[in-house]
Image 1 (cartoon, rainbow, N blue to C red):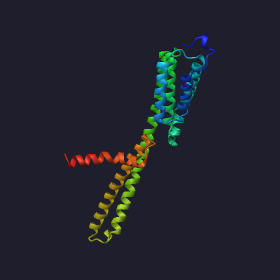
Image 2 (tube, one colour):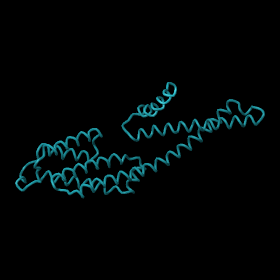
Image 3 (cartoon, rainbow, N blue to C red):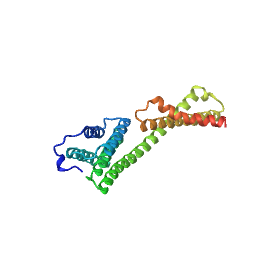
Image 4 (cartoon, rainbow, N blue to C red):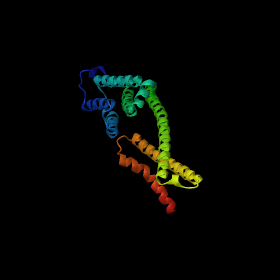
Amino acid sequence: MPTNSDEQRELSHEERYIIKSLWSIESNTCSAGLVKEKIDKIDKYVESVLKEPTREFIKQIHEIRDVCMMSLDYFNCDTLRERCYRKIDVKKYVQSIGECLECTAKILYKFGELNDEEKQQDSDLVAEKLKIIEEISQKSKSKQNARRAYCALGSGAVIGAAIAYLAGAATLAPAIVAVAVFIAATVVGALVGYSIGKFCEKVSEEKQNDPDMSMCTAIKNVLTPKCLKSQSQVHP
C-alpha cells in the first residue's frame, strides 16, 4: 500500500505502461491477441516489479475501474438488446471492459484497496452482462435461423417445380404421373434448399464466433469435419 512518503514520487515506467495499457483495453482498440499480451505483461509487472506503487498510480487505477463500472452499468437489458439487434459487436466491447475491470480489481486487491467481496462483485458484474448478451444472441439467432429455413424451403420448392415444368413434366400422361413428378421435384428442391440454408447458417456461425475470419476459412471449417467423416466411412 502506498505511504505518505511517496506522494512526490513520479510514476515509474511500469506504472505508466500499466495505466496506458488499461485505457487502451477499456476503449476496445486492441485485438484479442494484443489484449492478452498486455494483460500478461501487466500481471508480470504487478507480481514481480511493483512493490510500493505511488499514490498517483493507485488513484489512476481507481479512476479506470470507475469508468469500467459506469460503462457496464450503462449496458442493461434494453441497451444490450438494441445493440445486438443493430448487429453491433457489443460482446467484444463488454469483454474488453470486463478484462480491464478485472485487471484493475486484481491490482487494487493486491495493494489492499479492495476486499474479497468487492473483487468478486466485479467478476460477477462482468459475467452477468455477458450472460445477458448470450441470451439475447441465442433468441435472435433462433428467429433468424427459422426465417432462413422457411425461405430456403420455399425457394427450393419453387425452383424444383420450375425445373420440372421446364423439363416437360406438364406434358406427361397420365396426369397422375405429371403430378407425381411435380411433387417429387418440389420435395427434392425443398430439401436441397434447406441443406444449402443450413450450410450457410453454419458458415455464418463460424463468422460470428470469429469476426476476423475470412469467408474462405469459415467455409473450410464447416466442410472439413464433413469430409473427414465421409472419408472415415469409406475407409474404416
